[in-house]
Image 1: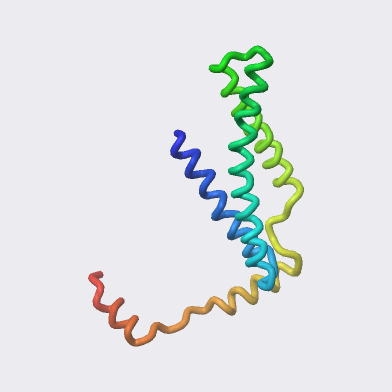
Image 2 (image 1 turned 180 degrees about the vertical axis):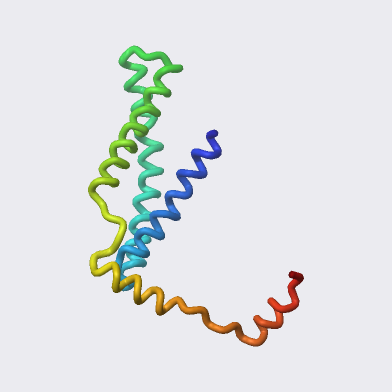
Length: 128
């Protein structure tokens, strides 16, 4: 279960990079992706400082060590749950503009291009 959770957290980086690439103009995508990655790394570093402080605070309030670390893990869980709800209600999943015209442009631009001769030879030699 822990590996699954770590994988899901790691996958969120990819989602963020895709989201910023799709939602922002080409002239600022690189900066946006770098900023998003930087904030992610900053979050990892801050976690290394804040979680021991939360643990110490819970232990100093009378929780034992066995419960202190569990309570410390509960705090970011609640914060992320609230952030997820806020993200759901306060953001949009499409860029500004006429979505119908975007779809028409995308469908006309995504027509398949013929394979070069070398590609046809390679694909034609594969077993079927």
